[in-house]
Amino acid sequence: MRAALIAREVVGEWGWPTYAKTSGGRGVHVYVPVIPRCSFVEVRHAAIAIGREVERRDPGLVTMSWWKEERGARVFIDYNQNAQDRSMASAFSVRANADATCSMPLDWDDLAECHPTDFTLATVPAIVAPESWSDPWSGMAARAVDLAPALDAWSRDVARGLPELPYPPDFPKMPGEPPRVQPSRRRQG
Image 1 (spheres, rainbow, N blue to C red):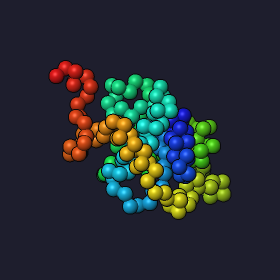
Image 2: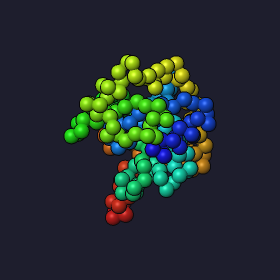
Image 3: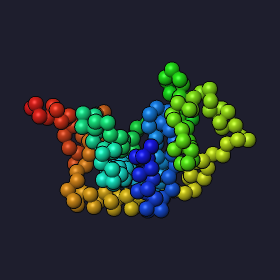
Image 4: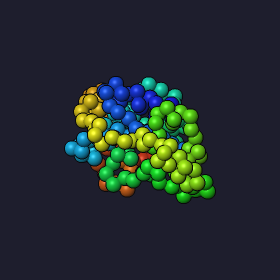
């Protein structure tokens, strides 16, 4: 939860709106509506810049490390969810687990008081009943933002020597991408 709040703080400094939802699993997804004119690479770079700033603010809590062996118990900001052809749990989607947990859009105030298991196939219909629920994502598309501030932050990070980060293993090798070799295997070779 704290990592999501830091992400909200970071983009809030640019005046950007944020929307939150439970993932249906253990995580929280933070959404920022984006004017649809950037490439997937640019959106991914914006996510990396935001994630790096979140990590700088609380490196003991957050990591941008792609390799699980380097993360420890830290929260991973999955910047590659913004790469082309990636999928994620949509709002209200049901997860294939014993509890049938659902990905639930929430107000930020409500997010702090909930647990992902609060939202299941059995509980969500009553929660979203029209007389008792107001859609916290209403009007999201009308608040779309230009990614320029985040892309400027990406450029500043690159100028400081911070590299491109690994893409998912099913992607072709991308320009500037570091080797896709786990650190433990790199040491062996």
